[in-house]
Image 1: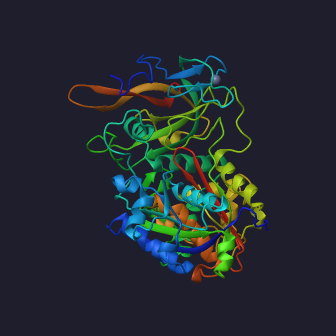
Image 2: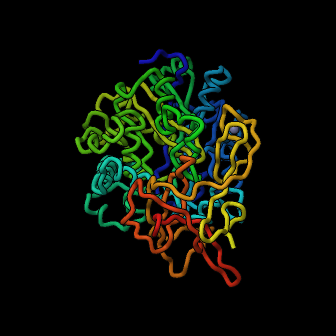
Image 3: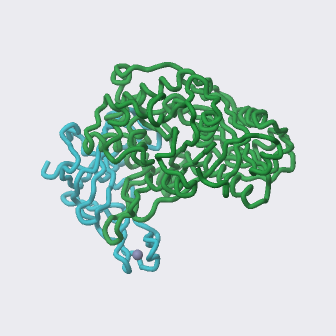
Length: 398
Length: 138
Ligand SMILES: [Zn+2]
């Protein structure tokens, strides 16, 4: 295990259950925050720093989430920040709070992310926005998020012989994992044939291969190791946060881009973007894939979960289907992936998701994960990726 | 008329995408870049340059659900396929809709494709054209 240099303690975690609740993201965030504070044994006025992960679907208050949540919890004079990095927003907020603690500028911080979502596809911000690639990809191509997931999935089939049934098995696994998770939106086991009978959205992916959009919230209380000791809290620790960008030339097509960089002139980097995200976290934490007991990966689609197995070093390129089918990534297997149920069971609540992944690792490493517990878990990794090139990976250790 | 100005030529027979080329390091970009994005360069002047009009399939998918605006969907909605094609000279993967009528199930990674122009949508005044991909020689 890495030495304690650069680590911060996770004193408390909390969530608002995922679903379509039709209420304000502020309400969800406050529920998650109060749960995390109670878990940490702290009162809100003791929090010295608030890091909010922003949402863009809630107008102005969503853009200044840190202050929005601070006001709702009661103005306390805490230092505050707000940040937006799309799906990586939660990891960025954690990183900001961590950096503040490690710099000695505060002892204890609260990180919150919450969102509400409309039904159906995520759509770009409204109005005519012809200089916005996110707007243009819809206007000129009709390229939704599932379009990109479909491209990745088809490429796995063509290159590695993956089948639609392999993809369905990812959903089956995650639905079994999430079936007893009280915070999951879908708490029901799904069968292979049910996935394969659902309508095609972006071939080869079907409705049940693609994660839903959801309302939800998650929060964590972070502190210095000294603060945790003074409070006599035995806390799990954040050992690394990776927020890397890609390296030029980035040769894998990504949302919301129309094209990759050109691979002529400058040689592509040794590590492609998705590989580099977890790699940077491992480097910082001083751990490797062999040291992990579990992983929470960003399963926007079933096929994408298989890509992540390779990207985070659980197996070599092209071997993810075998890892899945051998049961290695199932609860009880060598390295359970998405014991929480993942996005397959939660759906996307963009600024909350990366924080929710850290909540799950925390419960797992404390041995508090109930029916989805990974026995004896001591170290885990989360990984995620934000639109426009935001890495997101967190290593948590006991 | 083109659905967007300056991204592609309106040459019916041999349309080409228009990108940028850096005068210093030769890096190429699509859509056109404001400045060279190679981190070791960043100093060249960018000039407009047409890109290869053929390439090979990196991947493909067909969209069966109607996307939200600003996509202008036909009524009734017609599904459309999208291909990611690696341009022959630039080794740059570019997305485009497949020409309507192309049998997407007959495609495969590595298949050779060429650029074409096709209708994206129409209103009372204009037919809006966009670049599309089709199998070479189709
Ligand atoms: Zn240059």
